[in-house]
Length: 319
Image (cartoon, rainbow, N blue to C red; front, side, top):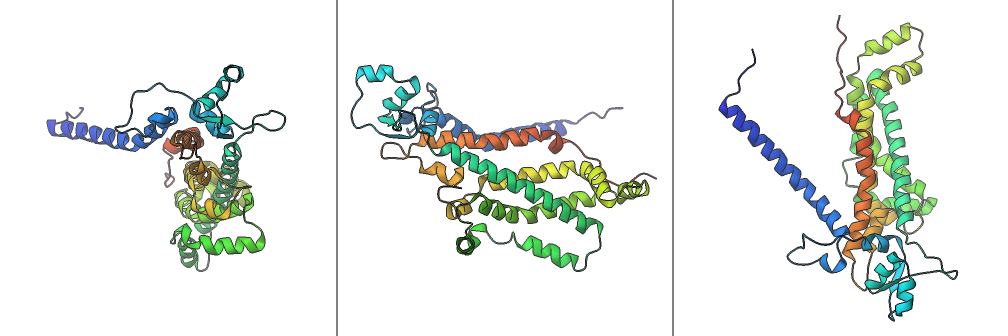
């Protein structure tokens, strides 16, 4: 017979639902604020009290992607009407779009910085998760002398804040020529995420019964074949979770990107705050860049949602 919930249990369930909704709203408030500011006119971005109802516009995104300078003389009515709609938006804000000698619109540095972030984050995530999975498998399946000490040493690399080692890393990178390079950041982020990847993946691999591999070895599989065909599919949930965390860490990292890069390999986080308008920070452009910067992480997490939410059955084989 189905158990009938008491009034106290019903009240506690409702209270839990309310608490979850409140916490969710608190965490979503900054995202809403960024998204709304990205579509606000510039004169409404810093109003007190904040403007909630407004006519959305895309001027901040136009300014984000087009290189612009302050408008010293007002355009003639003919020039204004002949300009594309997006260029008129920039003119309305007291600025003009910068063109080269051939009349082509010059793009801002944001697309390059965004691509740099994508290259560095994806590559470092693949390397950290790949090497972390192999290392975790070795610690999980083989007897290694000094295993506890080695694992503690790997974990100890995360005990210091990254900014503490930023200056020494900068000096070393300058000597070997890795400053302002993609590989410099990739190596740095991979090393920083590797310890997290090893410890997290070891926990998942430890929960995979060794009998699975032993059965594969009896059937004639090599150790490597058993790893790829038995262990990796069973550890898919752990790999997905580890990849998400490593990607978010590399994607959002600010201190190393600010110190180690200047132009060629600079990522989006240190570039976005540098966006200025006519003499003052243009908060709508900064919000637009931040809003677009949030999308890859959201998409990546959404694509891996089945692995993150799926309940993987780990445990002993029934005998």
